[in-house]
Length: 303
Length: 303
Image 1: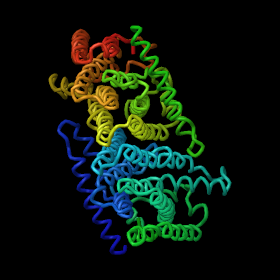
Image 2 (image 1 turned 90 degrees about the vertical axis):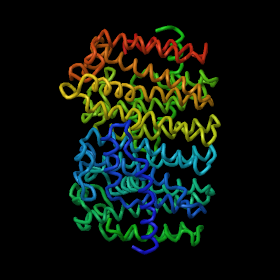
Image 3 (image 1 turned 180 degrees about the vertical axis):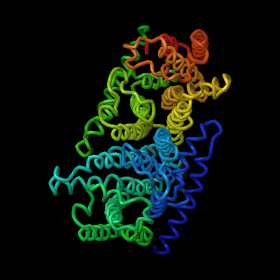
Image 4 (image 1 turned 180 degrees about the horizontal axis):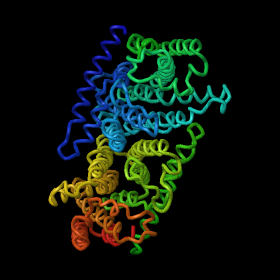
C-alpha cells in the first residue's frame, strides 16, 4: 500500500476507533451483553475504509477530517451491522470472519440479531449528532440522513443483499445477459451504495456543491464495483490464511464476476473501472490524492 | 372503546396508512420481494398506536396531527421491524401474529431479517423528512433523531429485548426482589421506551417546551408499564382467538407481572399506573383528552 494512503487509513482508523470506543462504552443502565456484542464486531479488525471515505469526501470539498469522525463512526456501524446479519445461519451461515468466530457463534443468534439492530440505530443517532456539530441547516441535515439511509436501505445495501439471496441458483435459470445484469445490481448495491454514501456524507458535512457530490458519486460507483470484482477474484485465488474464511462463494457456485466472465475479463473490468474512478476525481485536483491512491489499492489489495 | 379515542385512533390509522402505502410503494429499481415483505408486516392489522401517540404528543403541545404523519409512519416502521425480528426462530419463534403467519414463515428467515433492517433504515429517513417539513432547526432535528434512536436502540427497546432474552430462566436463579427489578426494566424498555419516544417525537415537531416534554415522558413511562402489565394479564386470561397466538409467555414460564406477583397485584399495579398517567397530563388541560382516554383504554383492551 502506498505510504500516503497507508498513513491516511491508519490515522482515520485510530481516530474513528477512539470515537467508537467512547460511543460504545458500557452503560450501567443497559444490559452489558448487548454493548459487548456490538463492540466485539466493531473491533474485530476492520480497515475502517468507510470512515476514511467520509473523511476523504469531506477533504475533497474543503472540509476537515477531524470534523466528520462521528459520521465515519456511523458508517462503520452500518457496515458492521450488515456483516453481523449477513453471517447469520439464515443468510450466509459463516462461522468465521477475518479469522475470528462470527457474532452468532460467540453470543448466540438472538443477541447477534439485536447487536446488528442496535448498531444500525446508534448509527443514525451518531450521524445526526455530527450534523448538528457541523452546523448544518435543517434541509441539509435531513438530506444527510436521507443519503445515509438510501445507501444502507432497500435502495442500497439491503436491496443488494436481497438480490444476492436469490443469486445462488442462477445456473441454468438465467441467461448470461440477465445474470450479468443481476450481478451488476448486486455489486453496485451490496457494497457500492454504502461506499458512495460514505463519500457523499462527508461531502454534505463539508457543505459541498451539487457538482462535487455528483463527482464523488461517480467515483464511488466505480470503486464500489471494482471493490466487489476484486473480492470475487480474491475469493477464488486469495490466500486462505489472509482471507480468514474459506473461499465459500466459489465453493457454493455463487454468481460472481469470475464464475460468469472468467478471471481475465474480471481483471480487465476492474482495471477499466479504476480508470473511470480516476477520471471522476478531476474536479478536485490535488485534494483527491488519497482517493486516487485508494482506487488503485482496492483492486490490488489482499482483502 | 370510548368514541373520542376510537375516532382519533381510526383517523390516525387511516391517515398514517395512506402515508405508509406511498412510502412502501414498489420501486422498479428495487427487488420486489423486499418491499412486499415490508408491506406484509406493516399492513398486518396493527392498531397504529404509535402514530396516534405521535399525533397526540404534537396536539398536546399546540401542533397539528396532519403535520406529523411521517414521524408516525416512522415510529410504526420501527415497531413493525421489532415484531418481525422478535418473531424469528432465534428469538420468540412465533409462527403466528395477529392470527396471520409471521414474516419468516411467509418469506423465509433471511428476507424477514432484511425486511426488518429495511424498515428500521427507512424509519430514520422518513423521520428526517418530517423534521425538514416542520421547519425544525438543526439542533432540534438532531435532538428529534436522538429521541427516536434512544427509544428504539440499546437504551430503549433493543435493551429491553436483550434483558427479556435472559428472563426465561429466572426461576430459582433470581431472588424475588431482583426478578422484580429485571421485570420492570424489561417492561419499561421493551414497550415503554418506544411509546415515550413517539409522544416526545410529536412534541419536538410541535416545538414543545422542556416542561411539556417532561410531562409527556412521565405519562409515556406510566402507560408503557401499564400496557405491558395488561399484556401479561391478557397472555394468561385473554381469549385465544382474539390474541391470535397461543398464550406462549405463560406456557414458557416466562417472567411476567402475573407469574411474579399474581393476578390481583398485577391489576392493582396497572390501576395505580393509570392514575399516575392521568396526573402527568395536568399541564395540558383539555388538549390531553385523547391521552386521558388512552390511559384507561390500555388497561381494559382485549389486545
